[in-house]
Amino acid sequence: MRDSSEIIDTTVIIDTGCANLNSVKFACERVLAAEFTKEFATGAGKQARQLIVSCDINTIRAATRVILPGVGSATAAMRQLQAKDLCQLIAELKQPLLGICLGMQLLTEFSSEGDVACLGIIPTKINPLQADNLPVPHMGWNQLSVSSHPLFRGVASGSFVYFVHSFAAPQSNFTLATCHYGQEFSAAIGRDNFMGVQFHPEKSALVGEQILRNFMEMN
Image (cartoon, rainbow, N blue to C red; front, side, top):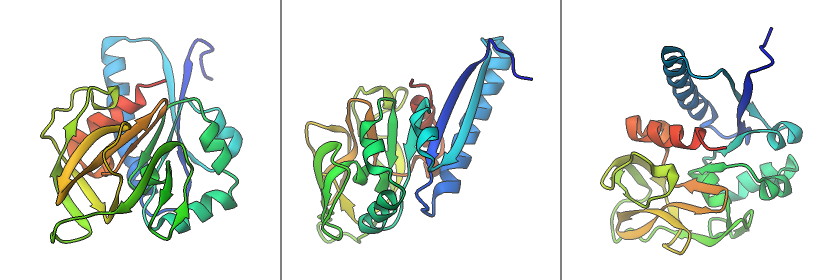
């Protein structure tokens, strides 16, 4: 039976039906397991931590924080969100939300991949990556130049993370981190409680784990 003094901390991964749901879930589980071990060793206060994959509106609305993952095309992903009646809900969330890869792109106003209107939360647009004759998609490890945003606490500029993408957001007032691949582009963007990363933290080893840990400490 759960102690009534425990604090319920819930991270909800939105079930968009995309292929990387399990890899994001497993990465978050590793972070939670490490945090539980640390709290147990130090005798820190009780906190019941939950990780849920769901597309249920009430579950998402009640979460401490939310992750919006995504792979594939913006058109198909927006169609999924619309079919599940999640577009307005996501835009109205007040808790921290992290979009990953396509999930980041969906937070913007528009994607030229399929010429599709996105969620319109962060006022920038997604365009084809101008890679200056480098192979596209941009696939593999590349370096970040990071800001002082809390998402990047403990992450140094020059750290490597893993990318797979052909479209990107330009640099803007909403850029939280940049990367260079033929052009300088936004590796992370944010506005208020909404954040997004173009790379895959769940595939980015210790650096990605630190970024997920930083996010999962936000409330």
